[in-house]
Image (cartoon, rainbow, N blue to C red; front, side):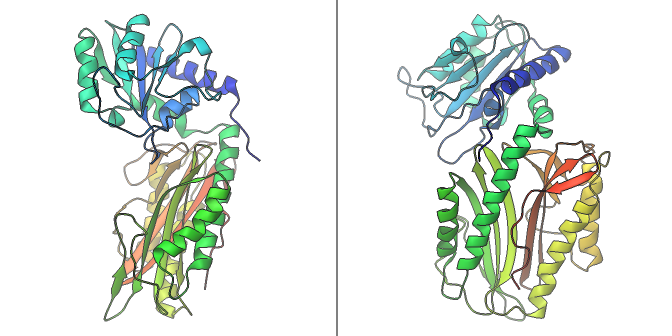
Length: 390
């Protein structure tokens, strides 16, 4: 059963963001997000307003539309918040109706809102600059030449790192749906099936639950003296080569349910597992579990990373791959902290973390990922997918 975020919680989030901005000496915040059919980076605006734009990005056509697929919250340190949206309110926006501006001319409406909020000559913190096109930002700068801009993405990152009870409930629901999805995919992974067949089996479960697939990192192959690697970058399930008896398969899937992400990975053998395949599968599990067992309030993200990555090295596997950390926070996207050397963020109750390792050696590959929530006395596990398929 879906547990919605109470409307009052969104108002409280805006007040906390406002207070952090004011404490930094900012006159207000301009918060940007981008939606569209691929989800993109919607988290900061949805966090403050419960608004997501489903419109895909299209280039501006002056006089007709600007900054489509983007949404903005103008949040003055003193005054009411304003949401600029490019699609009509579907009844779910958690802001007062008189604070919502629906328009095709998003860029121009942002400038008007900043002017109306008294922010045309102050210092404004920009949140979501990584999803704001340079041309759009330059247009805002030209229209408001007296604004002093400051990077303020860390304000929302700090707030989003610790989840409320309602958010944890939604993340738990999402993790369970992700778990059922990957189990369906693993069941479909038989000799003769393609990567696309495997993803299609998972989509039946995910779509029926109201979820959206963000990605499915997939690879299969054979290790040893004559290794084989089967994968595709676009789409990641696009390889037409069927699974073969004796190959290994790794799945790393991520998706969204009710705005909140799931992220889970598993491995299996196609046919009976060999000892060498199992070695890699078990090493990935052991490395993740070592990091999870280090979870406690007051520990740092870096300490968790060193526990898991140290276990990997202890087992005789080099730390390498496309992602060098042990994991990350998860929520309305990939959240802080990052479980990697150098991230000294201190764990607090309510943080939801993903632990992941992909281990490769001699053409063999093992992959494993789990989601936990930090509690006062340790952690609770949110993912509950079958651990071993051998």
